[in-house]
Image 1: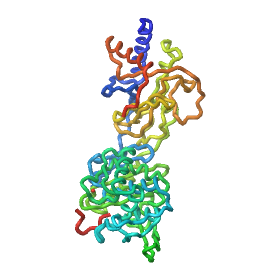
Image 2 (image 1 turned 180 degrees about the vertical axis):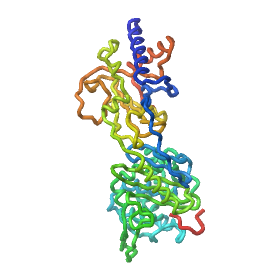
Image 3 (image 1 turned 90 degrees about the vertical axis):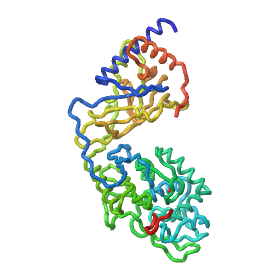
Image 4 (image 1 turned 135 degrees about the vertical axis):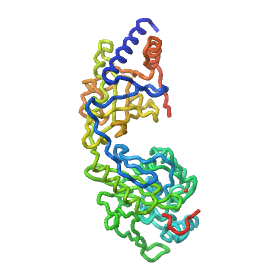
Length: 473
């Protein structure tokens, strides 16, 4: 490396390090454990004004529970949500989702001996499906989500994957894709098995996808009696209704509840996942290990009321993000010239306590994810950022960083990926990795060498014993 280049990059790093500390306005900077990550850890602090306290949480009797915003993923209430638990029939959300994603509603499901005889009448919830009986996928999904028919879950599994084993492989793979990392499914119905488990948090992640799917929601939210039949083997019409008592006309009717699924086995206790909408806010609640059937409805309503009454959904605009992640002070420095770091964020909303403001919001790099690269994308690096408030994650965004010649806003501020109002200009950019910044000349020189090398190197992508008497459903 020529001496002139070394001097230039040393000056650049010195300027950035000092400017970053001044911009973030933090008395002490704490960085994540160093990794081979080309992205700088982003962090801001709340304003100097008094921060509104996190709302007082309601008491619940569930063994574990969680309340999240379906859109932002913000966790508004958490009670042991990462503790292993048995889901029982809320498992059927995943069974329904995979069916919807892989079948058309008018396809025919023919029930095999294995599927039709997979339940014990009077013990496991079922609709008395016969061997060789045929339903459409649409009819099957209504039986699955409304009546919690266990044999129907097995029939759908065979229809989708050809076998139960193949289907559970699909369930587990899809769970991981949805962020349910501590979940393992061994059957399609939720009947107890030591190797069939999840967490409240994981079920909420699965629920986010299900309750966003219009086909799933239209079936799951059905109120009244659903008429099934006649079929090829059953001439009578079967009347199916939801097991969810939060729907209209039921004991625990909650007007904002738009979907949900109940569950119970001796091992799991009573479980419930629910979805509610009010004034543009979409919430998902999961309660597990409830001691009594009624408790799950009482807890769920209390948590929904807590969320709707104490939080607001706030839109994040381009200027808002810029103020949270502002590096314009050193964009125009003499050392940089026309060089700039191009940040693009896809965030749009965060959840805040009612009296809080965006000035109290901070940004943190999600240390559970690695930065990734994609040679085919129009950006070089991507990582997950969490919006935080008073120590709580209230939303997240993908941070995209472009280190090549790129289109950025003419005012040199970070912008939302969806912002179509920006006037583009072409400028040169490169990545500064603050994990490698160190106080002292030795650390500074090491940082300089790394950054210079990043300019020339292509980075690769880093990364359910049956019960004795109670009906299992």
